[in-house]
Length: 227
Image 1 (cartoon, rainbow, N blue to C red):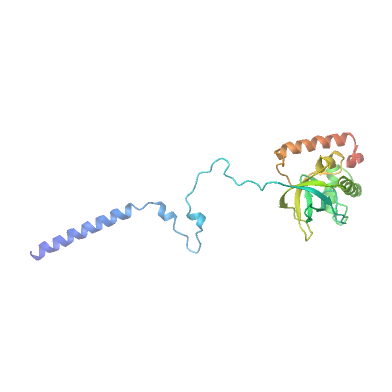
Image 2: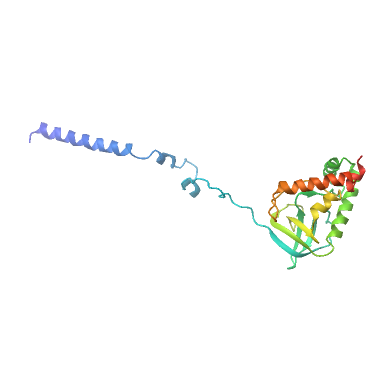
């Protein structure tokens, strides 16, 4: 075989190799480039997972309510109408902050908050503090016996080292929130939640507003100071 023929064969083989190499590159899926981590960023395992279509009910559910029967009120100087120390039936001390409603502050150091609460009722800050003491006494009287707390153990923040949890309190078959609002001792304000009995927050709020309107008409609690 002469030199020219060998050279032609080599060129032909090289062309074939280049052709197939080009074909291989062109068939790599374009999505591979998207999987390349950005320099300086760590790709998490979640990013490497394929995207799944959302399905009805796929969203994480809220933590279910736990029912605490046989609770008792623990006397404490920091108890007020909507937040108080509780001893559970298994001898645990917790601080419960009720959902949905807010009673005025009795501590005059919280002037801005008291002014805000007073404005809700259309009364003075001095009158709001008076209502705060009435609400504290009202709650203590309602919780003199055993009662039930429904809680999801959601933190209600607060300044106590013990911490607080949001809850709904039922005493002798009556909802403490409803009783406070019905007697003009609390404004409708605060953390909301679906109810333990299946009602949503909107239905519950509608009920509270009905009770509030009735308290206004009857000039109960804070509403006695208004025309």
